[in-house]
Length: 74
Image: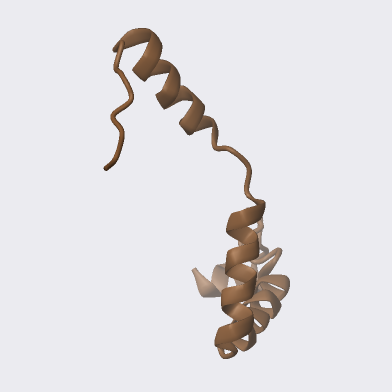
């Protein structure tokens, strides 16, 4: 397969973004080596995420189909 990709064309674009992928991987490695910055970015990433559509779907199933009541956590 290597020979085919390198010498006969990458018809299915397997290697089209390899350079940007390896550059991003290098940046990721540098970031991971800095635990404080890694944690900060991880927290910001989670905090910036919106409500997942599966959350809404599960809630709808629970209330509309299963008629389940919320169960308080002590």
